[in-house]
Length: 355
Image (cartoon, rainbow, N blue to C red; front, side, top):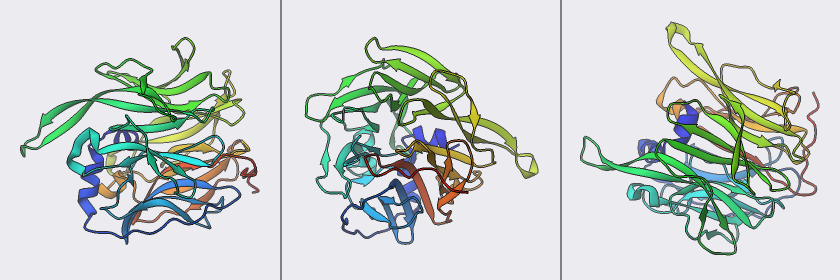
């Protein structure tokens, strides 16, 4: 299932090895005004991975950075980018070295909205899940704890045994760990409250289901918001939280699978509203700056190797009350999409979708 694949760090090398034989690169273009949506896009023809932005209709594509298989850094699959609060910069997890470099093969980067000024963040090798704080100077991220292992072919592989949340100052200095690092505990930062006092996160411990939690940064104490839920994200004004939940259903032939649906609730509790209800999986939901609509990536049921890594996905959008579902980027069997993220900032509000 896609949420599991997102957190399985070995998948990136496996997936790329399936199809990579070559690629090309292209130069970035000036950033555009108005509502913009960032997405990581893996295309097979030609074979390349790009971080690009489009407008609210899916038009006016702009490549921020990326390229063919030998380009570095290359946006990491399954990891959404994060915009700075003013929308002028974007942070992403990138492939920095070769695929067999293990945990240190990736690191975090920040660039301008047009790809200019690209710079790596010190002390973030092996990190992912970057998340800008509202102050624009701090970045939260995930760091994994690994156990090395030799597989049946005698190759060294790394098995994630835990994940903790860290903070780094963009001005410099060593990153600092925010949550405990121990076997069986996986935590991922998802959303800061607008005032920067609360951090929403995903948490899984042992065999327990995923749960959405809120951490008060002043005390580092956690509160469980929702059980059997993940990817909690504050609306721009902090009044609502969007999140995902799993459900099981049967396919033809008796095979069972799972899908995720998108929900919202009031930040203070209550007001639960289901926005999607299909046999496909919703992921990477993002509020537009107006708080009137959400974008997300929709994945088909996983019935083949390519569908399991996201090919055939589409970027969708829907009003915050669940009305007017629309396609932004249509599904293609030769394209996989990850990490939809609305660009914040004055004048970038997409507003309500007209049915």
